[in-house]
Image 1 (tube, rainbow, N blue to C red):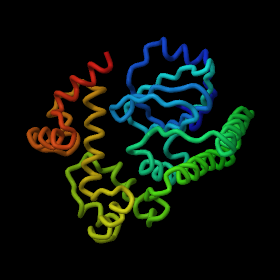
Image 2: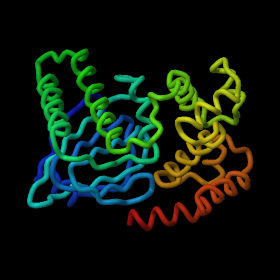
Image 3: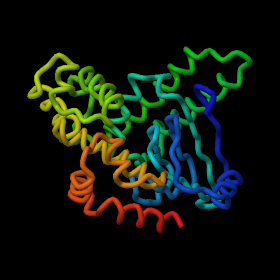
Image 4: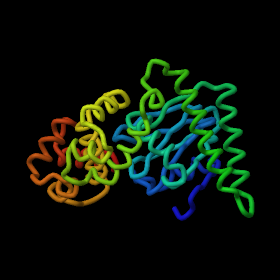
Length: 276
């Protein structure tokens, strides 16, 4: 995507076109937010496929393999699709990684809040259609959309531990450093030193937000990328392991199987069967 931000409204005819076209699992070099107003979506993401009826929200992070099949329900289908570069709202993007990493799509209750989301999308589209859109306004509207989504998510899932209840500035910095270095063969101390804090304190923050240790989060990020590479490339298991900082193929294979229940080879075969 060449644009910094792009927004469009998907209707029933566009949904039919997407569903009937070649639409294989793929990844993007941008972030994507889908807001389902009416209709339904079959979403293959995080290597699972589920159906969601509108109203729903789905956030697809950059590089995540997914496949979306929108469809009509009750003869209606309307969805807003917003695509943007990570650097456009970087602080929000890092928060989104933690909020959506295990739950890319969730349903919302219809009502005033959801209608306001639609209004914000219309305002965002209106600004983008101007001859010279004010990207300050666009950035504010997009941030407001995510703030409103998270507000509604808190109401529906009030027992969850949320990012804003933790010292998230350190966690956001950790995520930024992780994205730059997860392919390297570096451990907990590397990240703690980069953040000028002890491994113990960083672990406390990670447990508070992710309910995982630093090591587990690093492994999760590496294995997610391994799944993406297994699904979308023809690289060998050894090449993928080496690219992700694993010096021994055996160690990479054993870790992958321990965490996923499958060997990398078996996972690749299963994904190719699902795609076909």
